[in-house]
Length: 226
Ligand SMILES: Nc1ncnc2c1ncn2[C@@H]1O[C@H](COP(=O)(O)OP(=O)(O)O)[C@@H](O)[C@H]1O
Ligand SMILES: [Mg+2]
Image 1: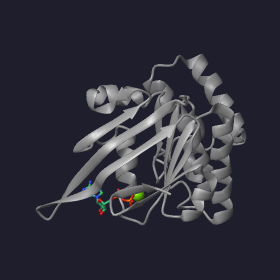
Image 2: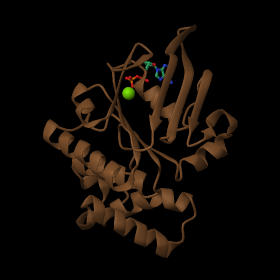
Image 3: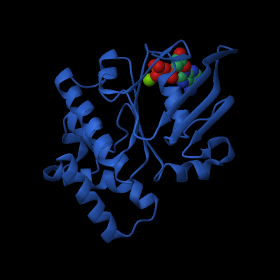
Image 4: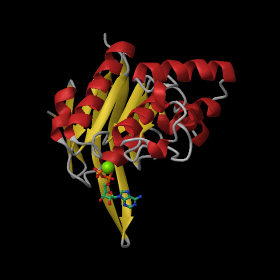
């Protein structure tokens, strides 16, 4: 039997808007098996980022369950969720979440510092991942000098350096032209093949789904597999 990496059961999320409680996710169910590349397509405001943050343990649902690699997220306190993000699940935010004044090396080092990896090991891990991503020549460059495609690759490298089993990417192609977007999507395919990483990409661009084997549509808080 294939390994279930992600289980989402009847997840509801509400936000308060002008004194009203508005449902954003309306009973979302989904599952991903090890090695899946999932894609969620949906228009802006559909709830994609909200769902991805819940899967990353950066936000909590109002109702329902999320189980990642056997961890029921509702059983974990904030510290437990933070720990989950140092090796089980990595989240790549839409705006990359990099520190512009830090070098490529320093940005990728951050999650390793958080998880207390010793310096020599950090060096080796960062050099390996930079080599894999074709970014070795940018190692000492400050992030603010990089192109959008390079920033996206640094963000992916930072997410990968802790060897997560689940990689979540929020609109990874939104800031790129289609040529660079294709390169990033091909990179996800390669990462999936090389490391068996389970990947979930959300995007308002339906072309992203061509690079996935599990395809979902999220409209107005309702998720359907297509
Ligand atoms: N922290 C928040 N407080 C109130 N409303 C929010 C918050 N975050 C998102 N929303 C609203 O929830 C809806 C879904 O947002 P989001 O998950 O970002 O959608 P998507 O990523 O699909 O564009 C939007 O209408 C947005 O304005
Ligand atoms: Mg979004």
